[in-house]
Length: 289
Image (cartoon, rainbow, N blue to C red; front, side, top):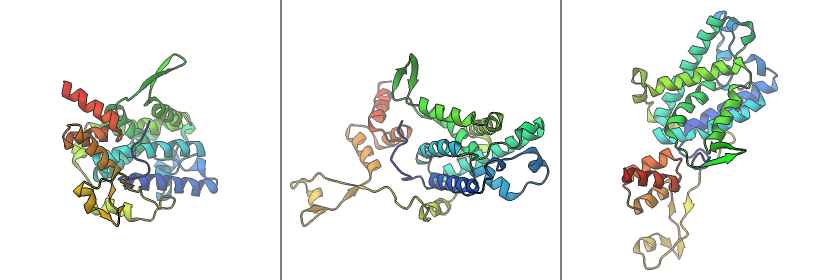
């Protein structure tokens, strides 16, 4: 299942989260501290250090969890493109804080030595993202494997299950805490969905020279030329076409040319990860209702 345009185009906050998770996981993994990064009853209700709270939010507890977690964070960047970086930053902060609070309450209630420590990493954000994934992302294809009816969304669910049960109860508690945080956000508790961070804050992420992410999504050149078209002639220099076109804008133009209005086209593309064919199907079904 596609997560939309490749790379972190229009998703600078998601890029920051993925890079932070990778750097923290690798840095503490090299030091052999993987299994000591999460929250436990002793360090929460004893003396909780800032560094442990930070690593519990960003550093995954093992390499497999890092691989599955980073892949899911990369896919869920589609929600930042859908609601905008300003609101998505609020979603990240809300789901993370609520998830951590629920984990701390769980540790205090259970007081179970076997939960020492909980699995670390951005579980709150990942599993909170499954709530809009379940409700807002439509199924585009269905198929059967060994008699089982699956869809293109099934692989995302399977990756989440792998992550949820990776460490037994130590990973189930953070995962369930994230799902509950996502449900609270969707219920718009305290009108949280109306909040957004300033543009200056989110634009900072796009200006930072993140490691491993130094290239942005390149615009695609227009290869079509028409000597009789005045608009094309206006953008040609010595016979070479120099204008470029944003792929997202190209998708919108395609749907508008099919007779749909621009606002509906943008909403349908956001819901379908910028899949033009699926977006056109949704718009056609909406017209027929």
